[in-house]
Amino acid sequence: MYKHSEIRIYNDLDYIQPVCDYIASIAKKFRFNEKEIFQLRFAMEEILANIINYSYDSWMKGEIISIIPEIITNGIKIIIRDKGLPRDIYHLPVFEPNKISENVSEEGLAEYLVHNSVDTLTFRNLGKEGQEIELIKYASEGSIFNKIKPQDEKPYIEIPLSEDKFKEIRLPRPEEAGIISKLFYRAYGYSYVSDAVYFPERYNELIANRKLFSAIATTESGEIVGHIALMKPSEEAEIVEWGMAVTDPRYRGQGIMHHLSQFILNSAIKNNFKGIFSHSVTNHIFTQKTNIKLGIKPIALMVGYAYSDLQFKGIHQKLSQRESTFVEFRFLQNEENIQIYLPDKHREIIKKIYMNLGVTINELPKPKSVDYAEKTILDDSIKSAINIAEIIIHQFGKNAISEIKHYVKRHCINRIDVIYLILNLEDPALIDMLEPIEELGFFFSGVFPYYVFKHTLILQGIPNYKYDYSLIESYTDLAKELKDYIFKLDPNQV
View 1 (tube, rainbow, N blue to C red):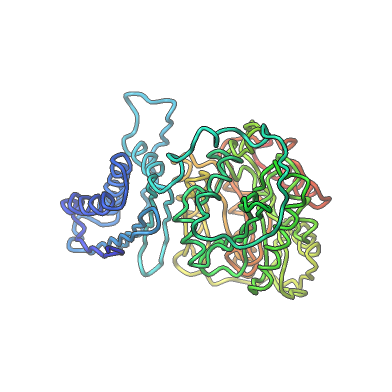
View 2: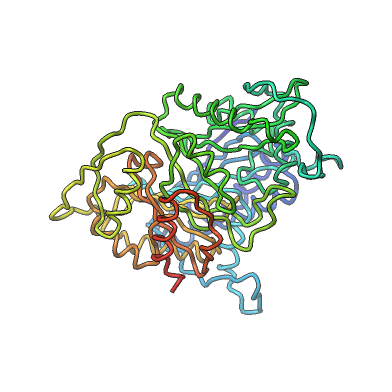
């Protein structure tokens, strides 16, 4: 059976059509419908045309572009690599979908539609190795969406308490993935952030590949009434996120979530992860309270992280603004002393966050000078499921600010709601770079040990939206202080 292949073409527009025909033929074999194949073709056509038109001067003929399609569970991943000119193609006029006119920019419209045609779009600057674009597109056929029955539509909150009793926490079996998907649907509808819960095959593959560690709660009659999981934020991650937590309200009052959370915390410890974290929603304090009981404490506030329609059916109504989350964290291995650079502006709040985690900071002295590389090395990705972007700076180059500007403009063109900038607190260049970065509109979000770097600093940028911070519920004193601190820095609050 087909798994993956590699196509190499010259930088010539005549090659685009046969490449797209080949990609479409693969997609057709693997359960993509006509609309999804059209979206995939469109995305590939626009990406390849942009590379050929903007990455090579007219005299640069015979250059190689590699296209690597790979079948993944319920979808396809395609990587496009080239060693053309470092490109600045994100100079397009902003496309506004509510202001379509005869003067609309075709380029701006195309960029907007590519973003909305795939599930994940990632751009990687590889320095001397050129650049690559990775896109992921999922097929809808493997989901539970067309298997929902009328009785599944009724919100749990409308169903009376069950007389069946909670019995045990155990690992799920592969054949139970569909039941778990329906459990999430009954609780959240289609609004849950991680769409893997709606695709039983993808869910099972994540478990098989040890990217997901899950547990379920069952009753005396064998019914599945609760779920929780550990998820690695990346392939090489040394920390895990606990989440995908849901319980059937018909069994409320039996301590099911307490048993699930203790089970999953012990699993994280047994698997030697260095830390555990969660995204706690802020339209209520229930998850924050659970985390405090587990020793998991606030380290960042990600304003506008999720869509406003994340809701528990029958309990939480659609929010008036995007959902913000507190990132909360606990070290699972000894981290009593750390060495990092502390930017003057955020020194005190960073020290408080680490102190609250039981960690003492030995501040590294500010460097007298920094030797910058010629080029900035970064990863840039769009998470279409929640319409956010993430820019990871692996190396500051002399062109760092102009590079960041390019990607910010690209994301504004794509109508991205929030842009997160991921920086390294062990990088001496951070001290001098922080101020010019914040002048671009970024502001403090928090710290995040082992997220990308051993000690990660997160900044956030919110294009042209004023959030109402009074709607952000905070449970602990530090969470309240963090919210107030970030509110004062948010340039949209002026």
